[in-house]
Image 1: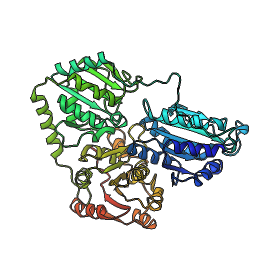
Image 2 (image 1 turned 45 degrees about the horizontal axis):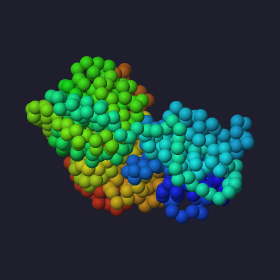
Image 3 (image 1 turned 90 degrees about the vertical axis):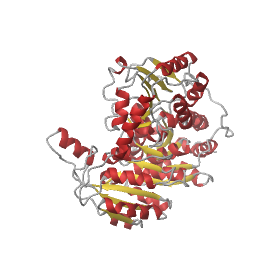
Image 4 (image 1 turned 60 degrees about the vertical axis):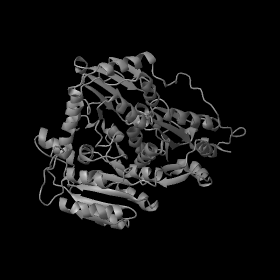
Length: 542
């Protein structure tokens, strides 16, 4: 058995069933080993960045480590954005790159790039394989590192001669690993948890701020049970919006500069803030320096480096969120807050969800479209949303049920939605999958329509077309001397593009036609593109 065969066999031992990639000369040995192996399906992307995004979407919905594989040089550098996107959102991923022969490293030969060095600032760990006999151990370690503690991407760079090197003896996959210095906390400290329970019991205006780490820990149900029992109003980060349905009486919406007013009001007036699985980044909490002066702050996270990084914390708790949330019931914490606190928040939230929106004749109102689309989707639908105005409109106005809302929150990567949706549909083929994007972000990844067609994937695409980079246009008009460099002149006929791939499409130009247009899109079997014409001056505050 050679190194390439050992690598593929090791992936099988980790129960990998899907791989996203783009072949090239320095990865051919591994691709050949994959071709001769049953049990791992391969999805060919049309540009390497999207291999990372597909692996991300697959991981987020399957609960497994996503795997992608590309060649050296430009293949590896193209993947960098996919790796950085996964790193900022803590997505477990293993990225495999081909590399020039190990004995030629450092000579700047054709398609040589120091990819392990290039990704060093935004990778959880990386390996440059120097001996094929190390491959089983490296794969075992990589999957363990990617999926434990704070999840994240791992890079494995494999030179061509190592791929072809024969193993010294029989192939043996390690049953256990022991990484010195890597012992992530699991169980929360009992004393700290008692302090949290006491803080909840004595609070008058408590709020739970939940982040995407709750999903990463597979602790959604545990969190719902906890806040229901403790009677805690909940606000979320963008990455955690579907922890509770939009209509849940404890769900006060998304926090932050682009969030829901009720959520911001709740945090501003709270006397206890329990942050769990979130890092309180600038989009969520613009001015965190003085928060500790008006409230007690609890921070619960798997990563000790995040606690206290952005806000001053009174009660830190480090550990696995799922484990910690199962420890709380024994302490029976219940918020001793007057019912009028929850009632006040719920009244504000209800008015917010029912408000009218700006309507422009001859154009679709994005908030109205998001509200209607969300109502029509299946209870467990998965919505993959791009970056820009479309992301903020969806975040603020989309009525969630019990599905998932997936987007690039940390890095804010345009072009994420469509490849993410491909990975999602492969992970959960039985669930309804929708990609929401703007015409700018769609043009960054529309070549992945090929992946939809090749895989016969039933993914629906809802595009908001305003012929401008909407969010930048909005910012320039508000805070600068006016819009510049944001008009999407020269954009193609998107219906003609879809037709070239054999994908049906339609255009809707006003709110009155949305209902029928959504019904047609959702009833179609297979990929479908629905384009909504949006006024270029429409803003996320309309």
